[in-house]
Image (tube, rainbow, N blue to C red; front, top):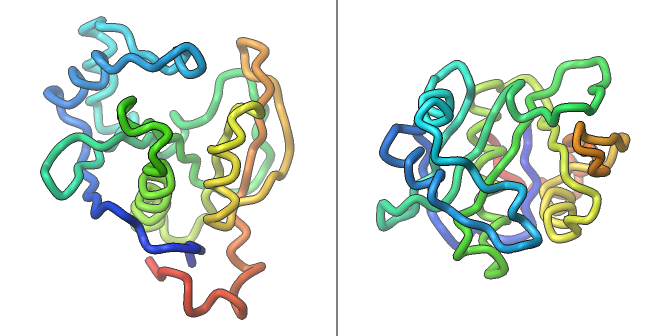
Length: 181
């Protein structure tokens, strides 16, 4: 698959399975009012669940070996309450360290998460579910070649837009700006 990207990443990120030390850090992250729904609890059972390999949580470390963000790759990235269409797709959900929000780092995490998902599942398209009000996230995913397929309501009644990778739209025009994974 080809990931479209419009600019080079600012950060060099590497993915490894989420470990207990970094899961503990995720549980301490606190997002502001707009994003507080993404806060984890400090429950030790939740931490065990986050670290279990079958659940698809990956930590992304920056060039200074600091936790930059995380991604969920696979079925656990799907949002409860949304009915997903038929077909094969790899679901991706990302979370950026709270102090990095608003500083244009979401693009780097989204790009690297897509690249990693394609390494894990090379023959599928990427699918993401984004709250409809989260305009910055929608813009980032569209920059990477994902476009709205349908909308749905999450179990908590939050409207979401489900985007699917459409890299074939850019195969000719983007050959010099795409990354093969």
